[in-house]
Amino acid sequence: MEFNIRKVILLKEEIFHENGPVQIIPRLRGAAIAIVANPYAGKYHEDLQSGTENLKELGLMLTDRFISSLGGIKGIDGYGKVALVGEMEN
Image 1: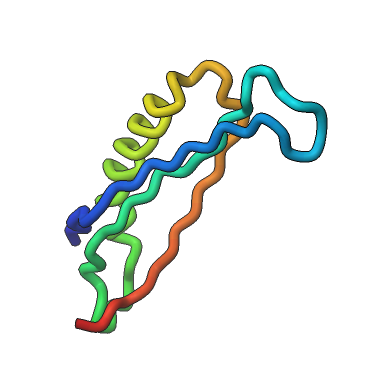
Image 2: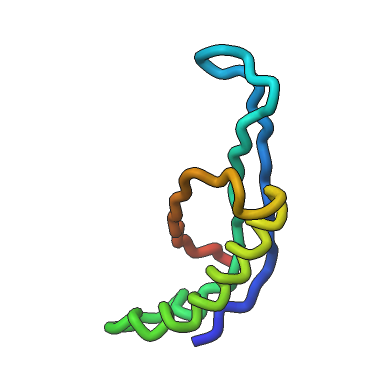
C-alpha cells in the first residue's frame, strides 16, 4: 500500500514564559505533521499491518525535517508520536 503525501507541516513554538520563571533562552516545542492519502479508505481490509512498513520511511523523513527545524538534536529532551486516521468524502 502506498501513502501518497498531500502535505507536510512543521510547527515550532518558542516558549519564553509558561508557568514558572521567564526564560532567557526559550524552550522549543513543535510538531511534524504529514497529511497522506489513505489507500485503505472505502474498502474493508482484514490486515492493516502491511501498511506500517510503508510508513517507516515517512516517519524517518518527518523526524529528520523536524530535528533540522529545531536546529539539531542537541537540546531535545523529549518526544512523542501520534497517528490520526479519518476518511474524507469526495
